[in-house]
Image (cartoon, rainbow, N blue to C red; front, side, top):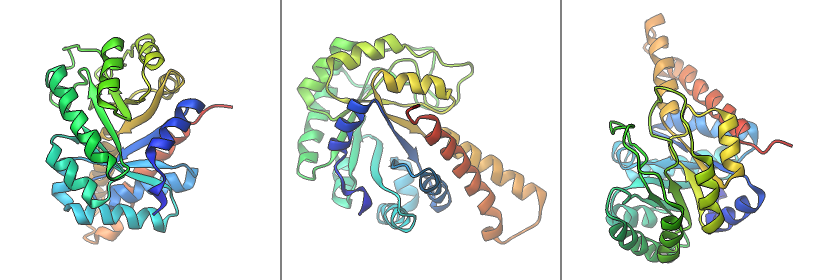
Length: 278
């Protein structure tokens, strides 16, 4: 499969080159196709992400087979990643199914528990040669308060990475999942400090709505993975609703393409926006 190159090796190359991979969530065939078509056009690799809810919606065998076959069909290099895995059991099932990378998110637990759970997942993933991502700090999820703060402390990040052996670390520097009420203010100096004293690839969650110039700066300061989800759902549904209002067409094969193309345009712009400027 195209994504069989280890993400562990990819992280090392990205850190040295000061580049990042886009990690895009997909929710059905149409959003998956839109994402992969964009990568094909731009000729860039990417990570395809599935959450527990998307896995439960599509069914794990279907969700991963769709990704594998669509990557192959469009000749795109990609990796399949579990986003915000909430249990060791879910991680184990996904690794067995062939995921190249998994995230265990115990960020809302005490530091010691986060370390313990993440360490166990890292040990399990070693048997599969899979990459492991964890999260440290408070990155507001959908429905959670964006007023609360809990930025990642550099020294804690260093200790966390050393104790767990995690490959990638999602850091809290001012981003949040969902839409922003005002332009986000990322603590880029904090990011620089974390990057200086940790060996893990750093991950930015909540990238929807963050301008490309800020993303570029974050990449230069150590971000190797940029997550995109909310904007994909939003553009797909807004475009689809517009199509349904404008006509009485009942053939979904004629209605869905416009929404899929909107996802392609969005992701293509993101992929081009995070490329290193020469």
